[in-house]
Length: 367
Image (cartoon, rainbow, N blue to C red):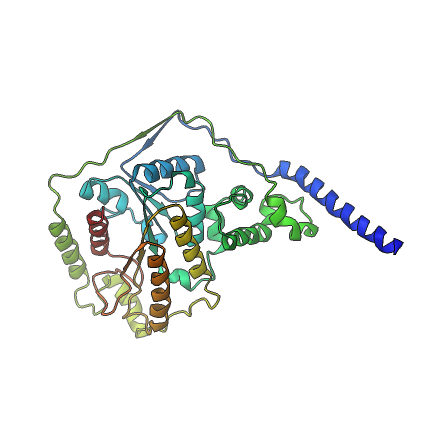
C-alpha cells in the first residue's frame, strides 16, 4: 500500500515538474515578429491579401475595418490569386461602387478561414458582409493540408488560437493536432514526453499583443465608373471565351483542351474524403458565423462535368452542406450544376473571366 502511494506521489510530482518546465520553455516560443510598421496604414478600395501570416497585424486591421463597416469580405483559395482585370480587387469597386477585401491562396480552406475570422471576431456583426467561395476539391482532401495550414497561420499563432473561447471544440482539437505534429517548429526543447500535455500546455501560452507603430488607418472610398455597363461586360467576356474556345467541345481554353484531349475525358473523379473532415470544418465555420450574428453567402465553384464524371456523390454531399448552411441562416449559390454551363471555366476547376463577372454582378445585386 505504501509503495503504491509513493508511486502515485512520484507520478504527481513528475507531472507538476513537467508543467513548471513547460512554463519556462514557453518563454522560448517564437514571438510575433516586431516588424517596423508605417505610422499610417492605407486600405485600398479593392484589396487582396494572399497570406494573413505575411503581415498579421495589417491583415487584422483590414479585416476589422471591412467587417465592422459592412464592406465586402471574400474568402477563397487559388481562384482569388488571379490579378487580371476581372479580379475582385480590380473589378468590383469600379463596377459596384463598393469596397472589397479578398483573402486567400491555395489551401486556404474552411478551417483557416474560421481561424482568421476568429482573430477579428470582435468586429463581426449582422452588418458584416462575408462571402466564402468553396471549392469541390477541398472535400477530396482530408481537411486543410498541414503545409497550407502553416503557410497561412504561422506556428506562433497556434497556441494563442487554442485559448480563444469562440472556437468550436472540433476546431480546437484540430489546432491541437497541428501543434503536436509540428511541435519542432515551435522549439526543439520539447521531448516526446510532452505530447499528451500539448492541449493543456498551449492554454498557458502568452497572449500576443498587437504590433506597435500603426497609429492611423485610412480607407480609400470605392468609385463607381460612370461608363460601366454590366450587360456589356458580360457580353464581352463571353465572346472572348467563345473566341478562344472555338472548335473546342469543352469550352475551355484551347491550350487546356489540347493538353487533355488525347486522354479521352471524362475522367473518374478523385474519391471524396471518407472522414468528411472538410464538411465538418465548413459546418463549424457556418455555426461560428451564425453565433456571431453573421448571415454569410457561401458559393460553390464548379467542376467541369465534361472533364470529370460521374459526380453524383459530390451532388449528394453538397446538398447536405447546403441544407445545413441554409438552416444556419446563410445564403447559398452553386455553380456546381447540371446541365453544365460551358462558359464558367477555363480549365477543369477555375472560373473564367465571364464567370467572375457573373459572380460579382450577383454580389453587387445582393448588396
